[in-house]
Length: 127
Image (cartoon, rainbow, N blue to C red; front, top):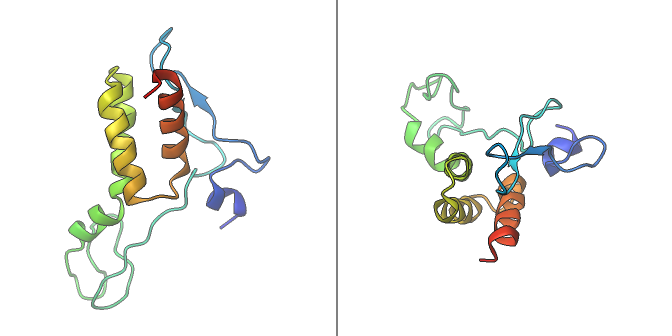
């Protein structure tokens, strides 16, 4: 993994690209898809019985076939809340987005895109 993937910055040290959530709208900037790779590193969810990473497609342990869907959901909770916050911002629901971003950061404090978006939202709304 490159240092740019672990820090959430582009190889040139720049913050992720953002674009406006609503045409002509004065909302906080919503991250655009990155061409250079993920803003945050992927998460692995190991099986508690075998320590083998979960199959990302089937959410099962490839060794013992244990269903790991609940563990995957818990491990990815911060990123799921972040994505829901993006959807809330696109519909203009700043209050819901703020709650989801704070919950996202509580679950995954190092999730830089969520921190940046929350900072932009708080700056814009003054909350």
